[in-house]
Length: 418
Image 1 (cartoon, helix red, strand yellow):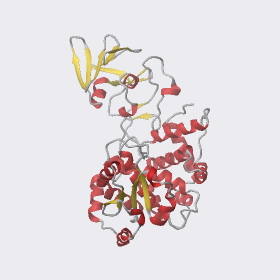
Image 2 (spheres, helix red, strand yellow; image 1 turned 90 degrees about the vertical axis):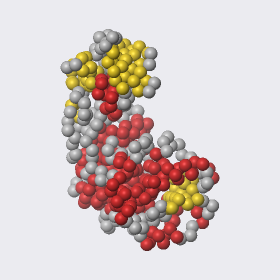
Image 3 (cartoon, helix red, strand yellow; image 1 turned 90 degrees about the horizontal axis):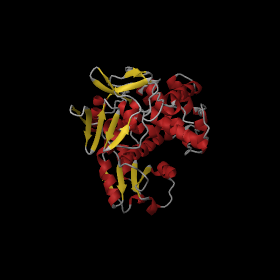
Image 4 (cartoon, rainbow, N blue to C red; image 1 turned 45 degrees about the vertical axis):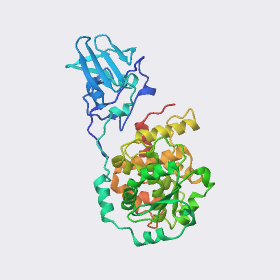
């Protein structure tokens, strides 16, 4: 297991207005440990962090006003003023009475984590830093792969084959695959955004799967295209789709979809002999392909995108618990096993609990056993064994053992909310 340096054990955080409730604000991250570059102080089961260091981390300019004996933090139009002698804070003209004392320790002002969450309004994750988990796909490697790798002849031949689906569409030509799209404002914007990523995304997937795969991407407006059988078209034509009108919050979500959809083509090409007969297929193709996006995003895209990450088990567990709660408001400690998730996804591939159980499974395996084993899994599924057998072969443990390990990691990543 890859373990960062331990700074402090996360205990109970004091609320701004009342005593902390363990069930709602106790945060357990990776075996109950918080890793940070700050110098936390634990006092009476409360974690205190230095105000100046944290505010500067959040891009505030921090000043000390000797006349009023106050700390002033400024970021744009945001103003936060803290009076250590009075235990009050002012944010943008709003006076906030604090339910705890402001502490000055060795000349530095310290506040509970809940102050930064409740008064400043940040996510606690912004204060938590982890040593990086292995991810080789940085800009240098991906640019090198693109520079040194020609497009296979079979791929070039595929790209010259006629397909009436392209009629009337504009073409964005990459080194290894093409994107077709209508001449609309949204489509042109998305195509321009995706263009610099096309070749590097393809090379990352080529390196993971150890082969190039025939791929063609179409950007489409759902209302002008009608109902389409994406799976059949992908299987017979190697064409995959990105919907331009989907309810995405960030433009980066289109990059998420590009990696995910092109990943489907690679997965299909690698597993063509039995991909539709194995009931574990959706556990692999959906849950794993969704998470592979983060291998590119972590080093190559700095803006917001709605991707599940190999480097963030907490977020996946948060989503998993959300779907568990939708099914059973009284859900307690019982989690779906990996086998149960695979069986469920075979018949209901959109089942939220099963899909997020699978996502948590792959994140756990990546964090616990590293990148090399994951790459071995991805590139050698099509070796004659079933998906389930291949996982057991690579990780040297039964599915039951790996499932139990995942469930324990899930419980530690975030306590139940119900």
